[in-house]
Amino acid sequence: MESKCNICPRRCGADRKNSVGFCGTGADIRAARAALHFWEEPCISGSRGSGAVFFCGCNLKCVFCQNREISAGGGGTVISPLELSEIFLKLQSAGAHNINLVTPTHYAVQIKEALALLREPLTIPIVYNCGGYESAEGLKILKDDVAIYLTDMKYAESALAQRYSGAADYYETAVSALKKMLLYAGTPKYDSDGIMQSGVIVRHLVLPGCRHDSIELLHRLKAEFGTSAFRLSLMSQFTPTENLQNYPELNRRITSFEYNSVLDAALDLGFSDAYIQERSSAKPEYTPPFDLTGII
Image 1: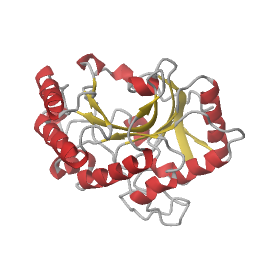
Image 2 (image 1 turned 60 degrees about the vertical axis):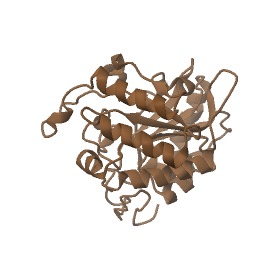
Image 3 (image 1 turned 30 degrees about the horizontal axis):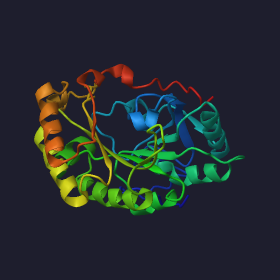
């Protein structure tokens, strides 16, 4: 790891060997859970589950984050690249359809090292599951290892991105990152059971009061990429967290009207194979316990 970390678009320049970066992490890998996960899109979780490794820290700090217990850099425990490589193999042996790297951005170098230490090869795809706020330099590190990108596209307008994620340049940055992901992974490909083997899934979480931004985002994505380059996943699972006192407009679940208006726009635009989520998915129990399962 370089003495000044610039692996993500924050380019905070932190010496993560001796301190922490904007992401809240140092040079050591911190992870909070590694287990079969059944709550991703059907082509990722399948019938046997996705081998999800939940890393601590994040370069976005979204005010509504459901994983804030670990996304701020706390929680979890330190593991070595060698230990991470063994976790990958255990998940594969448990029957996982893939290895799902959840919030891996700031650990790309360490993950690359872990993959080089594997005592036997992985025979299942690697999923890069991120918030969409990625740099070209960071994505390049794992481009030969990652088969699937499961990425967010959170906002169209910079004002919302700044208010809720402190990243006014989110849209432009995420679009540039998505172009790289599509270049590396190509159009979606599936096995005979419908499990994705390569490609890109773009997730969008509809936020309370933000349906117009969601619809604008869909229009921009179609204009930029068309409707078949990636698989769209339209999420309704927004769940208010306890820390939204300064964001009262977010302190509720979305309505059926809000979600359905965005869904109708997606279908009208031609995103006919988009994943659709029931509003019943907006439950706290869909966030797994970060209790070091599979880590220690």
